[in-house]
Image (cartoon, rainbow, N blue to C red; front, top):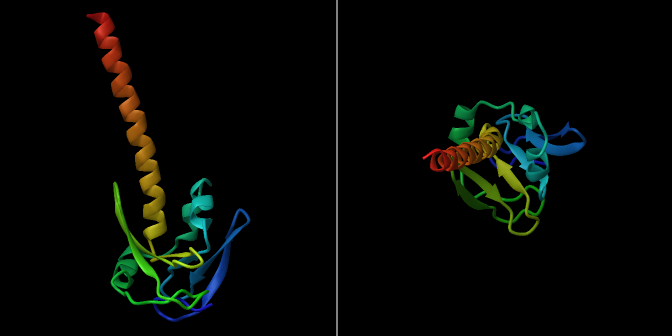
Length: 134
């Protein structure tokens, strides 16, 4: 397959049996449907995102690209939560392209969400104890 951003070859990279396609030039990653969600569940999955996030940011501004599988236009998705992540998604095959560094941000956001939940739980627990103590 060919990278939708820089038109270099995509090579297969495997992590715990899940294969993704990573660009040999810009180091962006193509995920077939649900692969990023499967990898999100695995500790250490950020190891596949070896690209420099600053290089990825340069490619983030390239739009009007086509799916490397279906050759139809990809849609830009802006995922806003703790970190703002822009990635491209195919409306047909549901694959996604993350520029270098974006998959690590995607995983870091999950960790941030879990941390926030723990902090909220602690706040609730401590508030409950203060009510009992008074």
